[in-house]
Image (cartoon, rainbow, N blue to C red; front, side):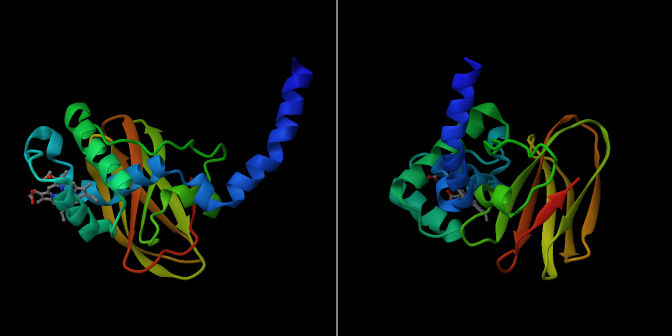
Length: 202
Ligand code: HEC
């Protein structure tokens, strides 16, 4: 049994390496839809589940495709319907859908692990920070070319507990925020031009 598992791992290793080396393969469409939804759509639609902004479904899918294109560029029908599905799910669950990726074991996000969490235009990223308990938390961001980024820490209950423009460069920038409600938290990164290769560490 153990030998069988080892042999399987051995057989899978080249495949895993291939998947990790190829952002296009690793970035499956479901993850992309969630990252798009959390990083772009929810900046306006976070009030949807509270009924502050009622979801109107009478608009046809072409109308929705046009609406979506205005914020994330032209998307195919499958992506538009995924986004629509996420919007209906939001209404009933009242929780931000987490991107389905594992937190890195060492807590460090690098170019490869951030690839599926980065939109194609590289101007938005949505990164899980994990479950956080009440208290002060911090994280550090670094990239080669200094760039001004808008950084937001968002709870899955949509509360924004940190929202600030910071210059992130090779010396690194540490941000601190307070958590009052325990829960899942995320870092929304917004660039005005494509964001470089970030390293995010505890
Ligand atoms: C800048 C704010 C903003 C952003 C960003 C935004 N929306 Fe909207 N959206 C609105 C407003 C306002 C309405 C309601 C008015 C209307 O129906 O035109 C709306 C309506 C909708 C509706 C209502 C249903 C319908 O067919 O009328 C859906 C679904 C929707 N948006 C999905 C999305 C998705 C998916 C994204 C992300 C790609 C997104 N929105 C991004 C502001 C925004």
